[in-house]
Length: 408
Image 1 (cartoon, rainbow, N blue to C red):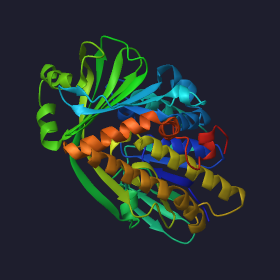
Image 2 (image 1 turned 45 degrees about the vertical axis):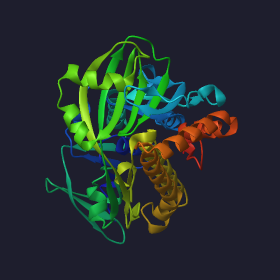
Image 3 (image 1 turned 60 degrees about the vertical axis):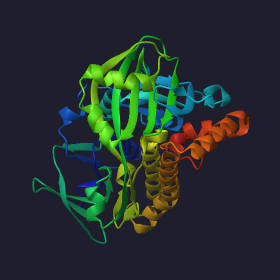
Image 4 (image 1 turned 90 degrees about the vertical axis):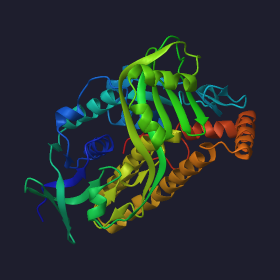
């Protein structure tokens, strides 16, 4: 049987290229198919979009050879402070505070701008033997048989592969064509995303301020800049986003507070609707899903990309072990091991973020009292606090080898 590529990956965002690089380490021939043009993907202009990379995800980037390229642009997160309150009234006195010094491994994570991480991944894919990029092209069909899968592109070209991987987002065409159904639920919230300049240093502290309409995350970037992920009701978010920049900052300021001095916008503003998207299955014959294609969740804990990268590391390890044993890397048995490893964790995390959002995004006085007491209790118990810190760092559970700092 002749194959054009061992593995075809649909989606050129972050998870797709990361998985391609991991698979190249074990000598597989991989093709990444991306609907977007490469120039759009690699636009290096600062726009404020950033990601929280947990410590375990940083180790993965080290293993892929990406971390040395982006380390100088990454801001360590040394503390996380979680508070509850209302806009203009300041936070509740009950605070959860997590300090990286309570674990031995180092910072809990790093804030990395989208422009740096995306460019580093795409450059690495381009320069790695055995990896091929097809950009500005959509997949319009996929046909499975006993030995492989044939992918049809909108150009009319076909590719024959052993395995097809969907890293193509919450509306995954790969999953839909494979017959995988999903649970989709809107939260009636929209995230307002931007970056700000501020007068005072952030000292590497990330803040999560829970307000009745939704949480406000203030995440440290290099220098006196922070990334903002601000959740509001969909109606309020549309009104706020339509404002001029100065008026936008005037609405943000009472929610943000004065602890970093004067603030101003840095870069563009974005919005995206918030909801839950959970695939019933992460696999189908000759098909596997990773990242948002399998599980889209609320950004309340900043774990969306980290969960996707854990999928990447786990699937790469499962494929590496199957190849070592002489198995068919796209077989049902191999893919079942991937799903068994990741499905429960992903479902648990998605449901946990869903529950946290419902618990905190309201102004019910009984719930406010309960959550304030709960935060105070967590903060007062070192063992429990340390558990939360390790969870934020991505160190709990069965870690794939790449997230332990080990080769495949």
